[in-house]
Amino acid sequence: MSFSEQWLTLREPHDSAARNGKVLDAVAATFAIQSGISVVDLACGTGSTFRAVSLVLPGRQNWRLVDNDLSLLARAKPASASSEIHVVTQPVDLQHDLELVLDGPVDLVTTSAFLDLVSEEWLERLITEIAARNLPFYAAINYDGRASCEPADPFDQAILKAVNNHQLTDKGFGPSLGPQAAVKAIELLQRLDYKVTKGQSDWVLRKADTEMQTEILSGWAAAARDLDAAAVTEIAGWLTRRRALIASGRSSMRVGHVDFFARPPAR
Ligand SMILES: C[S@@+](CC[C@H](N)C(=O)[O-])C[C@H]1O[C@@H](n2cnc3c(N)ncnc32)[C@H](O)[C@@H]1O
Image (cartoon, rainbow, N blue to C red; front, side, top):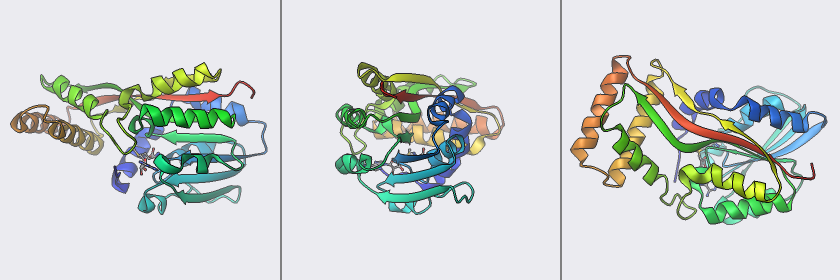
C-alpha cells in the first residue's frame, strides 16, 4: 500500500496537534538525563514522528528513519538544521527485514499511523523483538475506530462501518489489525511487564479544515466502494451531501486515535 507525500504533508499538522501530551511527556521524562539518544522510526513516511519527537528528546540525537517507499524517504528531513541531530534514512521492507532495523545501538523505537496496517502475527513479532532488546516503544496516531461528523447524515454510520471493515483488509502484512492494533499492542507489552502510558490523540477537524475533511471523506467513500458496502449511487450521494456541508462551512469532524509509550521493566 502506498501513501502520497501530499497526504502525509496535509495530515502532519493535524497529527502534531493531536499527539497526546501526557504520552510525549512520558517519553521525554524517560530520556531526560541522557546526554544522547539513538532512535529508530519505523514506517517513517516523510519523518513526521521524527520532527515531533526530536523536540522533546535530549540534545545529541541519532535518528534512523526506515520506510520501504524511496520517494517518501527522500523527503524525510529535520524541521530545522541542528548539528546535534544526525539523521540517516534506510530503505527497508519491514514485512521482511524488521529484525535488521532493530539491531545496533538503539535506545528508543518509534512509529506513527502505522500499526493499524499490520497483522496480529507481525505485531507479535515486532513486540517480541522489541522486548528481546529491552527497548522502549512510542507508537502514535493509531486509529481506534471512532469517528463522527457534524452535522450528522443518516448514511454516516453505514460508511463508518465500511471504513472499519476496510481497515481489516491486507495492507501488505496479512489481514490488518485496524482499530484493534493499539489495544492488542498494549496488551502484549503489559504481558511482558512493560509500563504503558496511553492517551487519546484524536483529530479534531474544525469548519476551516476543509482540505483535510475532504481528503478523509473521499478516502472513506473509496473504502466503501472497494468493499461494495452500498450502491455506488448511495455512496456518491452521501459524499456529495458531506462535501456540500464542507463547502458551506458547516462541517466538523472527529477521528479517534490512541498514542502510547511503553517502557520495559528494567528501565
Ligand atoms: C500512514 S503512513 C505514516 C507515515 C508516518 N509515520 C507519518 O506518521 O506520517 C504509513 C507508512 O508506512 C509505510 N509502510 C507501509 N508498508 C511498509 C513496509 N512493508 N515496510 C516499510 N514501510 C512500510 C508507508 O510507506 C508509509 O510511509
